[in-house]
Image (cartoon, rainbow, N blue to C red; front, top):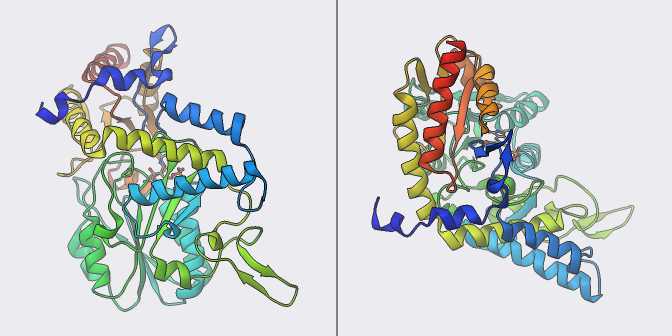
Length: 411
Ligand code: 7TS
């Protein structure tokens, strides 16, 4: 361990998460399904409770005390998100329901304005369904074509193919920062540079990156960046879309309703300024404030320390699980974070997941909403252990023991 990691007090960190003290089937919970959703620290749970107990009111519309208080807290969460990803301005942060909604917003709004028949949209072969289907729907409506950057046997993007695909027909590139099925960390800065050299904007799906590494949207120079609160210690039903001011100002709104307008008449409606233009209706106020508390919590530990600790966990897991007879690791990229996907010869992933569950070990078994990845590696499904900074090497040892037991029972 480096000096940095010695200051990472795992016991104290775990004590912040009440759920980690519970048992399942009379055994201590070993939660290794963090890519699906993370657990929540006490400070986030308390913040949401305090909002409902002491601050609840609708925002942006009340003259009264509570409405102004709730508005202030919600807008202060927006500023926390802005700092968290180093955006240039808080109005570049649009609250969403999560990553999925952020991608749909951009596909709809950017797509409506800029994508026509014969144009091309580039995604990659390792996308979550939520970064595939919205673009497919856009292509269906417009007659544009979906192009897919292929991946190699390690689960890395084939960048030469990407370079060949980019051209005058390309209207947007949408790729993930970290793959939820493989754990690959993609060279997103390079992807953006290459697209920008052809004046093509880039959306980055940061659902799996925001919880695990320090994101700097200005350094990446991406045009859009989306992520979900619930994967980074925040509540479900809230997330954020970052968009550069130039884009957000010129794109049409997507949902119409309250809060997104400046004035409404039957002859003509004018739209509100950023960010409200993209935030129709009463939002998830408690969720936004809870996400702000989650960001306070994560930055209190420090994303660099989280990344370093999780990197050690992943290396240890790769070594330990990879050494088990019959295990095939799916996703062996040079740059990886927090995800270990694998199969076990002759045993279906669902059976592995079920037996591990009986041991109190929560993993995901399935296609991870990335069916094209399963097809690429010619497997029906994988078992996925995904790590957070509150996991331990002892838990990985328990996972290894559990897998040995699976082999005894079913092998
Ligand atoms: N993009 C990536 C890379 C993801 O991993 C996920 C969720 C999403 C988008 C969608 O996020 P949502 O919050 O809008 O649902 N991934 C997973 C997973 O791996 N297991 O469950 C959800």
